[in-house]
Picture 1 (tube, rainbow, N blue to C red):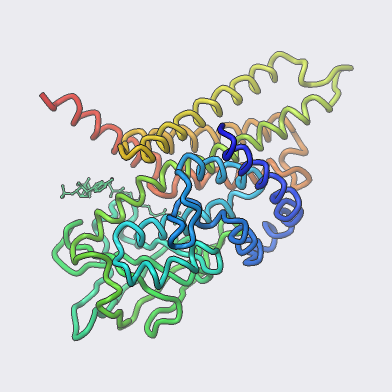
Picture 2 (cartoon, rainbow, N blue to C red):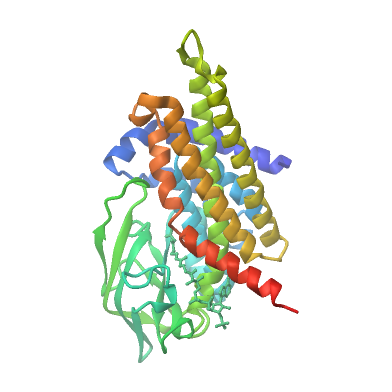
Length: 378
Ligand code: CAA
């Protein structure tokens, strides 16, 4: 880690221990999202890290951002994910928006006074995202949206939504991307999901009924929506990997500390080789995950994004988070299964990391497609 990265990490560690950690047990139980935490993280610069300073960002790299997300996830996977998705929205507007769209929507998002949400999934279009059925029909001065979106992270608390909708024929080429604001007539919220984990981060259905969106809210051109979504997910995938690394690190911290302190058969349980091997494997897998995430982020920062590596980073880091958090519960035994210790929360939070931003089966599909391309090039 360079000096800036160390400073970011230390600053975030201090903040999360003082301001996030004390609320976690209660807020997970009651499904409470605290906007003030998001805003404070914004005031510290952590809600717009990768955006240029011109739009209120910190102009930092995705490698720096990944380190920050891992650190936040050590206390709260939910707040890390809220930031990661909101930053994905910022990246879309920054990359594909025109100057007016950037000036209008980016400053509040980078400052953390507002949250962004990414809206692709539908009940009939999850892994097969290009099959989405929400329509955007051209009308005078804009488009009329009809349909619904599900599983939307930050649904209801976000103000700016990037909504993928069909303006043309079947498949990816008929999809366009729109900026939709909370409060737009014809746009409402459906049910809030009751989830196993990520209980602090609200997940909601979005409903569009004859919802008029002005032409100026279309991102680039009609038909570009699927590519916009895919290129955003490419970054999203390794940032989810970074969150998984933080989640795993916390589970390892809890395991080692507990095993060193807990006595059975007149010795610390850490001294049993069976548990030492478990913790050695946990640490090794976490290190592999961190290095993959770091390399995927570096490739992106150096202008050579690598979709295969981004998927590998997501796959490895999130499968590791599931394994490591499950092992942490095992090491803590009975108390690990109770809410007395946080490992059961991290285990519940890890599960969905294997599902969001493309299931780990979809990551394998993309990795395999890239392998086929590489091997059939000549
Ligand atoms: N960048 C730019 N363009 C890309 C791209 C990328 N990374 N990946 C693909 N494309 C382009 C392709 O080049 C292709 O363009 P052409 O037709 O011009 O060649 C087009 O997009 C279609 O690509 P595919 O043929 O590969 O499309 P497909 O229908 O076979 O689907 C898929 C591919 C990988 C399965 C894709 O549907 C997918 O990723 N599915 C999973 C969906 C997903 O990740 N959902 C996440 C929901 S969001 C979320 O979870 C966020 C949250 O809130 C936490």
